Image 1 (cartoon, one colour):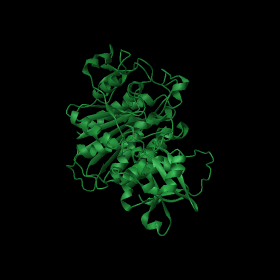
Image 2: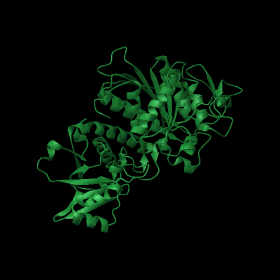
Image 3: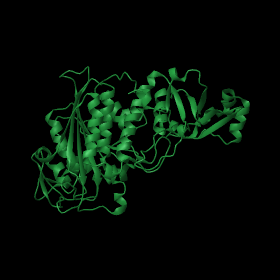
Image 4: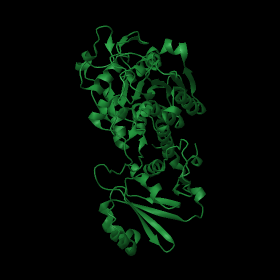
Length: 479
């Protein structure tokens, strides 16, 4: 990956003698020193224009030949800490074409600026719609070290692209193809399990997908870092890749179905995380499993009250066909545990209950290991990519009882839905395997700085940073 992959970035070596203008990023407390920073006349203009350095506020400063410089407000509220990269995402849409640098206060890193600028420059693929020709654009002048933050942005934007893709263009086979195309050039061994082999190895994935004319599949990828030998720590990732979720026979209302192309957000997140790990060549062994499936309604779709024999041999009664994500994941977790991973991490857009509890911006974290949870949460806090831990409360385990199977896929109580879903998954994690489960939303309901409306790769940076902490790895890219 090179800077040629990022049109919004301009390497210093390529900037040459080009005029480079400056964006002054400020907090409200710095306003009294504004004249010292940009001169008295420009400061007076900014005051008259109402610049208050509020979060995401941009003001272009006039000069003799047009725009001479710009101001960016960073705000000073609790949500606007120095590590927030998203505020720099407003710049690509507001700055005129040309080369720019950002001068920011102490505590802001160059990586935050580069990441935010790249994320703000993200544009959803056209999908056949004619895109307006925006012509020349603002470009951020960067040092060679910025490639690290650009890699993060590329992985996040790939996840956005996958989630945003219309469901007629993103079926199980398409998702599997995207995984292969992404990972094989980075040295991963990738296989896609389909047909009778899928039924034998992943019966729950097959059962969820049997209602669709687009057959389900499971992606299995294996990779080893260049500095990792056979004894290196094994990280196993699993992602829910429900490319569209009608709810099955327990069909969703129309309003709830409108965003169900995002139900493969967990797979998109885990694929992005695997890609970032490979790009950084971490000294790990890595396994990735994606359950790629469509939950449809048809004469051969799964029914409420079906009983499935899972890969582990445990039986599950289908209490609700709209609780399909946990069925997609359970066989993946069972197989992952066969390799005795040092850490097993899964992600899924699993429950509306997590959104009711935490809203769209806070993925719910569950873990059977306190130290793992602490490291993941700390990493998220450090990079403004937060999660919130919810409990694996054993007192609710009996709510999953079934009179005809080992367990039901839904709770008998209309409460704690995210907790009982996580408890269901824990039944398929072997004792002694450190495991964390992320229940994420995978979507921005409205546009904000650096976060356009649409698919989002929430907690990619948190999970990556957590992995560095858990395995005590020093990241040479500095992320």
